[in-house]
Each structure stands twice: as structure tokens, then as C-alpha cells.
Image (cartoon, rainbow, N blue to C red):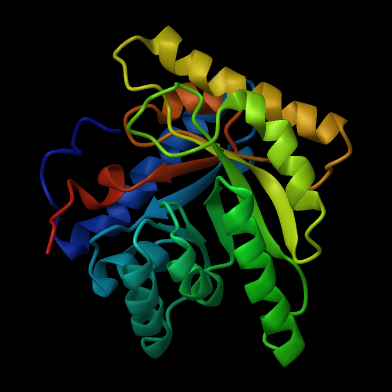
Length: 251
């Protein structure tokens, strides 16, 4: 980010638009440096613990994609934004989804990026079938497979070696569509180590496409601290909260 942007301070709502614009400039620069087009990379606003008016400010500044970690907040925020006539946007779930929370996730989001088991996949498939039967939905629900590419015990996601098998199982479910892979970069100060964790997922994504899953084009990788590395390694979606909203204020 620009030097004027202090990532340790929670900005007032009036400054969020400027921070979002600064982020757009950084993403564009990183994409160009990687030999890519700025439009190749989408900014996903990680809005965990953000009040609806702060999310609204980012959307008004040009944001079109949001990511929610917590399902209760997903429901509350989407309801508030709808009541406030927020600009059109797309919402993804970027946190772990328990089976008993899947119904709300499917109802209020358009994609779950954290699919990591066939049990959850079957649950989402059943819920989406019910939505299609009722006329609430008219096609399959988008999912990404979450990959634990760094092997961190603290992270959710499947092992890289299990991606192909889970993808094959999900393909058998008619109400799901695999649109890509998601990962959290390796928790290290070594840029090469972070890049390697992204390279693993990019290779897996390419393998899925080569195997005939043409819809699996997305790579959701990179956050505020490692987005430049992720973009260089082919990320199509970066999940950024701090760069726009400052550090989280847990309420």
C-alpha cells in the first residue's frame, strides 16, 4: 500500500473509499509487474467483524465482491445491505462451514470457497436441489476446494494429494459447480516459501482444467500481507480486509 496508509490504524468510514482505491492501484501494479492485466485479479473484501456501513463504503467505492468468514455475520450483513439498497455485489464464504450452517451459507452467498469434504459437498448439493425445486435457484451452486498447501495443522483444507479425488466426487453432484481452488499462503517470512504454497495450488488448478473441469478457473490466494506474491503466482482473487478496513475490531 501507499506509505500514507497505516495498516495498524482503524480508519474512519470516510477514509475507506480512498484505501480501496489505493488497493486497486497496488493490485494493478502487481499484476502488470507479473505480466498480467489488472483485470485478471479480483479484489475480495474480507469483511469479518465489519459494520454494514463500513462495508457499504467499500462497495460504494467500487467493490463488487465480499468474503465472509462467519455465517451469522454473513446473514446479518447481507440483510442490512439489502435494506440499505447497497450496490450490486457478489458474496463468497471464505471461512470454514459446519454442516449445520450450510443452509444459511447457500442462502446468503453465491459461492463457498472452503469446501473440504464430500460430506459438506453432499449437504450443499441437497440444499441447492431444494432451492432449485422451490424456484429460488436456477442452476448449480459454485464451490471452490480449499487446499492446505502449506501443511499447517492450524488450517482447514484438504491435502494437495486429495484434490483430484474430491473433485471427482463433487463432479457427481449435479447441484454443485467447481469454479476453482482456494488456499491460505504459508505462514512464514520467507517469500519463496509463500510462493511455493501458491505454486502448488496453481499446478493443481491447471490439472483440474486439463482433466476436463473447464469451470475450475479461479485461484483464491493471497491476503493483505502476501497479495503481491499471490498475484505473481497466478491468483485471480485476493482476499483483503486490513488494507481497506484496518485491523479488525472484534465486537
